[in-house]
Amino acid sequence: MAAKVFVYLDHFNGQILPASLETIGAAKTAAAALGSPLAALVVGPEAQSVAIQAIQHGADEAWVADAAELKDFRAEAYATVVSKALKDAGAEVFMLPATSRTRELAAMVAVDLATGVAPDVVAFEVKDGKLLATRPVYAGKLMTKVMMPQALPQILLIRGRVFPRPEPDAARSGPVNKLDAAVGTVKSEVLGYKPSDGGVSLTDAGVIVSGGRGVSNNPSLTPPAEITDEREKEIWRAQKGFELVRQLAAVLGGAVGASRAAVDAGYVPYSFQVGQTGKVVSPDLYIACGVSGAIQHLAGMRTSKTIVAINKDSEAPIFKVARFGVVGDLYEVLPALAKELGSRLGK
Image (cartoon, rainbow, N blue to C red; front, side, top):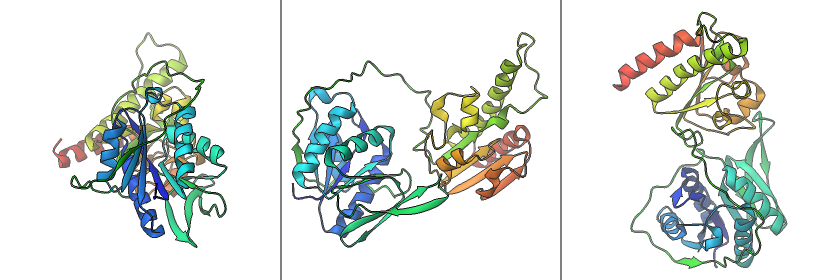
């Protein structure tokens, strides 16, 4: 392989994650700056079709591995294939989209190749033939610049919705080659898949409406008589609050998120959580409803382009990062907001 810059395409049975396409754009910029072709690595089922799409979006060549042992994502098996490919090529840069699977994969590849990983990269520059990556630290309060001056390849996990997605060119073509897919013994086994709750993906959404602990704070709502436990009453009120959150998200064509406090309280499943221990998001518009703005939550959404906060507490920390703030009861604000926006959007 002549290429020294590689990009990994995360996909599920041939369906490319949007973050993977954004990473192609970032990797293409790095490859041009370093004077290298860009090679895409695709592992798993339908790898051939994903490889073709990678080339159409900017890769110069692609390398694929789609053996039966790679049908399901298992980090050990995938890391074995990817590490060997990078080592054989003498790769200098390896970029991956920052997803739940690739975080595990990048860590294992880094161990295999005795190098380091820069996670959640939001910018980079070339300095002395190396990439100087910028990433958030201290829950997003500061940005730090990271370089691996000795170890190769430099591994960068690219945060989603930060870099522009290149437009595809159907006329673009390039070689698609086979990788060595020998994975040896893999101790883990995928038993099955469980569908998510559906709706718009949090990590890909351009608009996110999130609910916090405050969605349950409406004592004027009277639960049914059969609900006597105070804890159950709280969850019942919270569900009514999240109905308003969902309605606004539906009007805007966005996704529903939640703070850790709301998840821990049992209002919604963990898959909705935005934050340092949940999903890290960068939508164009983030509307926080009844979210206080704990550091853990801010770490997951601080890089949103526009933040709107709706909270009864004018001193809530969320207002410090919000572009627009509404001090008021979300039970009054959200229905009015959904109605007005729906009218303007013709919904």
